[in-house]
Amino acid sequence: MIRLTAILAALALFPTAAAAQGIDINSAATIGANAMGEQVRAFPAGRDNSPKAVLARLNRLCASDRPSDKQSCEQAWRAINQAHAKLQARRAAEAAADQGVTN
Image 1 (cartoon, rainbow, N blue to C red):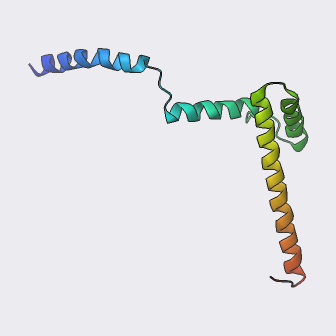
Image 2: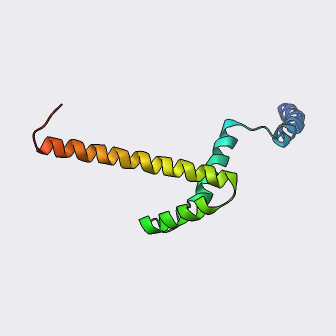
Image 3: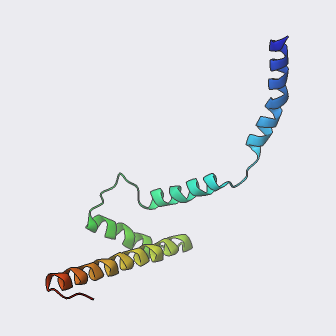
């Protein structure tokens, strides 16, 4: 009797589960996976990540006419410029500390 009840419950839930899987809802996980997929497409981990190779890929990305590529290009250059500014500020702070100048 317990087996029959379990089988009937499973059969009753099966169409609901199948219907739930067929519904295409953009969950946070799906959106995150899609965003990560775009990053991996633009900058795959298996590629040569030397500065020359990265700049060559970035130049190709920036030369593209696709709006999404233009946006990715702008974001990449913004990140590069921010990192460079932080590096320059850190170097200036280290140079000032070496000379004994403090704020």
